[in-house]
Figure (cartoon, rainbow, N blue to C red):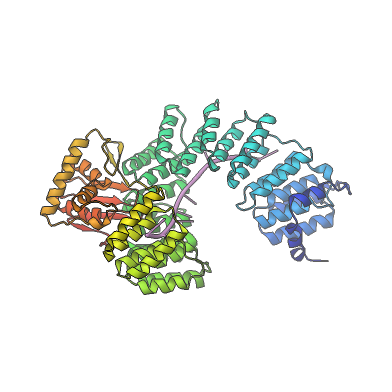
Length: 616
DNA sequence: GTAGGGTTAG
C-alpha cells in the first residue's frame, strides 16, 4: 500500500474551485456504515491528532474501517486540522470523489470554511468553499458568516466584502450581533472600508465590548489614534465595560501618540476596574511604557510578570534599543535564549537595532551570523537594514557599501537613504549624489529623497543645484509631510506644526521662542541654516528654524510648567540637527530635562548633553 | 461550531 506521506501532496495540490466542484458532482458511491464502536474510536483518535503524521495514520485507520463517508468522522476530521497542510489534506479527503455528497451539510462546510478562514495565506479557499456550498444548494446559517467575513477581513478586498455583506442581508443574518461585529471588523480591514465599518457600527441597535473594540481597533490600525481614544471615551459614556482586548487597543493608541500621561491613566484604570491582565495586555503595557519614555517601568513590569512570550521579550528589547541601552538589550537577549525561548525574526530585528543604536558593531556582526547559522533564520530586508545602519552610524561607510553589494535581496529605498545620509556625513559626496539620483528615478514622489540631495548639494556648496531641487519639487507638486510635535499638559494633548499660529497662546509662545533664540545665541549656539530647504536669505532661514514645531512645543512647555519640571515631547519625524543642538542648549540654559521621542528613538537632554551622544 | 487584541530596520 502506498504510504499516506507520498500520496498526500498530490491530493492537496489539486484543490481549486474547479476540482472541488467536479468532485462534488460525482454521484454518491457508498453507504454510511453504522458501526458505532468504530466511529467512536476514530473520533477519539482524531481528538488526539496534534501532528500531521498522526492525522495521516488516522486517515489510514478511517479508510480501513470504511468510515470515510461517516458525517461525524468527516466533520471531526476537518476541525482537527490547524495547519494549512493538514486542512488541505482533510478537505481533499472530505471532498474526494469517493465521498457521499448527500452528507454535505451546513455544519460540514462551516467547519472547512472556518479552518481556512483561520489560516494566514489560504483565506481565499474559505471563500472558495463558501461558494461551493452555495452552488451546491447548502444554505448558510448564522455561524457561517463570521467565518466568511473573517476570511474577507484577511483578504482585505472591499468589493469582496461588500458582496458578502449583500449575501448576509439576503439571507437575513444582518441582525445577528456576532455577524454585525465581524462585519465591522471586516470593513476595518479593507482598504478604504473604514467609513463602511462606521456605518454598520452606527446602525447597530446594541453595541457590546466586541463591537466597540472592533471599531476602535479599526482606527488604531489606520493610525487614527486620537479618534480611537475619542471612541473609547464614548464607549465609557455609553456605559459599556471595556475588557482586556479593548484595553490593549487603547494602550496601543497611547503608544502611537506617545501619550505618557494618558497611558499611565489607562494602567490605573485597568487596576481600578479589575480588567484581567493576560499576557497580551501585559505586553501592551510594557510596550506603552517603553515607547512613552519610561523603559525602567517597562522593565519592572517585565520582571514581575509570569508567562512571558517571545513578544514580551521582544517588546523590552526594542524598548531598550530605542533608549540607546544596547548592552542591556544584548544581555536580555542572552537571558531569553538561556530560558529556552527561541528568538524569531522580529526579536533579531530588535536586537540588531539595539546594536546599531549603541554602536555595538562587533555584537551586531556576531548576532547576524548567529541568526543565520544557529537559528536558521533567513535575513529579511529589515535585518540588512539594521546592519547597514549600524555600519553607517559607526562611520564604516565602505563596509556598509560592501555589505549592500553582497546582500541577497535588492536594497530598498530605506537602505539606500541610510547609505546616502552616511555618505553625506562622511564626505562621500559624489557617491551620495549618484545613489540619490538613482533613488529619485525610482521614487520620484518621495519628498525625503529631494531633501537628501539638497543637503548633499549644500555640503558641496553647489547652491544653484540646491535651488533647482526646490523648483523641481514645486514643479512635481511634492507633498511635504508636515513635521509636528505633540505635548501633553493637564490631561490635554497639544499638537504643534511648523509656524503654527492656531494656539490661543500663540503670541506668548512666539515671544518665548524669540527670547529662547536670544538666550541660545548668547550661550554660543549657531543655527544650522543648511538644513533649511528654501531659497531664502540667512536671517529668514533662522526664523524658519525657530518656527520648527519642536521649538514651539518647548516654548509652550516652558511657559506653562513649573521651573525644573521635565518636558516630554513627541515628534512625528526625525528630529532635525538644528533642533537637536538647540535643545541641548535649552536644557542647560533653562535647567530642564527634555525627553524627545522622535520617529526612531528617544533623546534625553540634560545639562547641555543628549543621551544619544549625537549619534542618531 | 460564531466576533474584536500584543513585538518589526530608517
